[in-house]
Image (cartoon, rainbow, N blue to C red; front, top):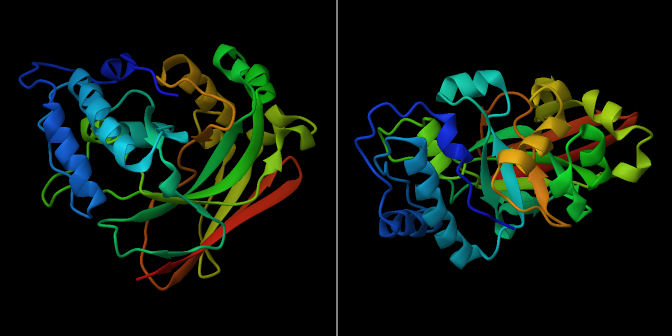
Length: 279
């Protein structure tokens, strides 16, 4: 599913590159620590090349522990997020099976360090022709389903280390858990391209809305995220692969004792996903 990519290096202004790619042992130790509930260190990155190289070693260590990736998370799909982290485009990271939970789950936050929640959206690949898609219509034709998804990233950096684009790249945009609900088949939408363009979502906590968003927040159109991933993301997408398209709205601190829910409308059809956060 994964192929090496150099595109990440083009997202950053490198300036004077005083550092170099961290040793694989450094990133392996970081991955082992993260899996054990520890915080992630600053691996001293100076360029996009450093960050991409670091993530290769980090991802390999996670793969050894959690199995082959089952999908891809695409981050920084909105201009405000790109500007906040100093990147000029999206960044992709692998998703692993233990990260993806079922609708209605009771999710313990005990193993998280600095967890957040946000409305997201997943599409699943139905046809390997996705890798040749050049238009929204071609991308839609190669997808199988649209799934509601609440992502819970964990900004698990060591105390005093501030997240920036290089660090977020080196750690694969920091996925932790996500809750995925029952979706809608692409075949059941009269016009998938128009339906995704008009998508809306309402994110609630304990029944109170904490944010609404629309599909155009995702690079202008959700399918444009898919096309970016095909062109520049560095992944070979296969049938069954999941693509997390990015944040639909703001990040919110995840705290135990709350129920979170996301309700979507797409092409006149509704879908939802929820979870209970526990200690």
